[in-house]
Image 1 (tube, helix red, strand yellow):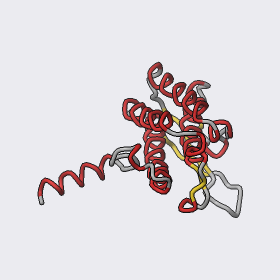
Image 2 (image 1 turned 90 degrees about the vertical axis):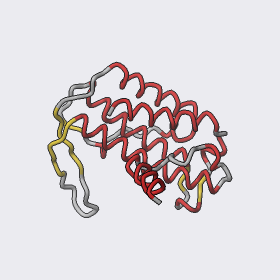
Image 3 (image 1 turned 180 degrees about the vertical axis):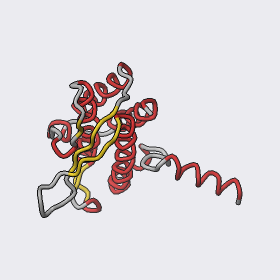
Amino acid sequence: MQAECKQNLNQLSLLLESLSTEQYNYKSELLSGASIGQHIRHIIEFYTCLSESFYLKLTQINYDKRKRDRSIEQETKNAILAIDKLIAFLNEEKVVGKATLVANFSLEDNHDCIMPSSYRRELAYCLEHSIHHQALIKISLSDQGLRHLVDEDFGVAPSTTKACQTKAINS
């Protein structure tokens, strides 16, 4: 799972090296005015929340209480540095062990749901979450005429890619 997460983060880093500050901060109407930078920040924050919980040997992971760093949202160099730290974490640590996910899924009340999980399961969640946001990033790239900066599989779940390949072979 760590190898797949590193591969995903490297994909993001390569994209960021190709974007200007204006492209990174472009607010796409197709995404309700969100920028690529906002989506990148969001992805990084989830991975960072997980890595910090692991480093601090916390048993609970709460993405709702993650630190929000607007500098990552605005500057590609800050995002790339944050991604480099996450890749170093994934290279250095064997991310295993039990964990508890704490989350509030309600707009009406402040009731936390507490669910058993594991660090590997949460890595899988961060990866799936990243792929989802990459699909949105791809929309912004298309909106800016920059779709050529990523391959067809960017923002597509591996299972979907494999299913499409199988369908093409069997057609």
